[in-house]
Image (cartoon, rainbow, N blue to C red; front, side, top):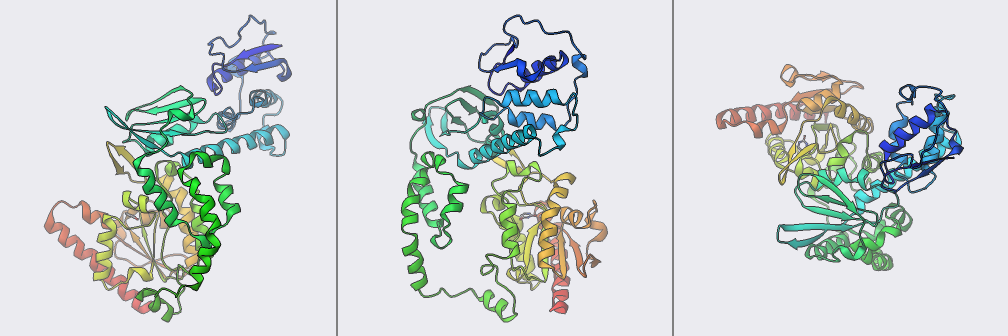
Length: 480
Ligand code: URA
């Protein structure tokens, strides 16, 4: 028997070094005992004479896909994960394409472990609740969380990016994670009592949670699947849930009994035109697509954003406006074009005689790409890969809505629509034939106007933008 002592539970570098040596020496999986937590740098604790090598260590090859799988699986809390990983690695000697056999029991277990770790990371991102602690250095935010697996390091980057301007610590029974505004540090585990139990902001959060709870939409099963009960004791809002559930039926009855609220004027206009209201289309394809996009991980941008910002507007709209990506305000509100660029957009479309609420407004990229700088999050332009990854959502939206006209606001939108990088200046103001009887009309992005420093130029460019939109309005008139 050979015993390997890894320095800690997720010591991937140690695992890789030891596993490579063992494989090179032809040591069979059932002849190895894997141990963790010894805190030693000596992988092979006692002197253990390995059999002579069958291949050089540098010749031990693994499929590229094994590394991300192994990095996830090593975070699983099952003690057998290390022997499983070594067994898979050893089997590569004779089965180099093993990972492609999804039904293989070892591969299937590893994939299940990978999924479970991913879910745990997702839950940690969603359910960590910070409480503010006043310290001589200013506020320090502390959270207590009990992950199922060894995911602290894996999950930490998200919090560093998302809460970059705050000093924070997340305490777990096994590890503590600390952010000092510059770097992450990891320390020993803690106890629940080490985190403060309450803070001033909590009352506000509870009021907000109770007010957004919609009894008519209550699905206890779905709710407990998304927010499993084991997380409840660390979520302040969880204390409200039993009462909210118990009172849900009575609230639904009183909602039914209450007189209907009068719809805003534009809803009547839509009805008169025979178009569907977004609000009444809760179960439409767009609503389902939006729900799917909530969990989008097609590119890494989700990790630095608060939420997916999906398109909004009637799903039968004849015109779709496509922007670049949500900004800071949109990221927080979860709605497109509600920040400064949205204001420029709203004023310009109104001046051109277009009622924005009649049309669908969306973005080429659905997550806010940003870079933390001090307390601010600075907008960063999405790159080609991110635009490409998100094209899928835009294509689905267009597939469902089937607009007659698509207005591309800026280069990113146009690149996504035409599937190639294009200069907006080359195609601005032209009605371009697009697929399925649709026309694309490129113009500038409203934020371009915000960035112009010279007031005269700004006024001229704004007028050009309004003129472009007037041509869109004329086309809409023809379409109607
Ligand atoms: N810029 C965009 O392209 N979209 C938004 O939603 C906001 C700003």
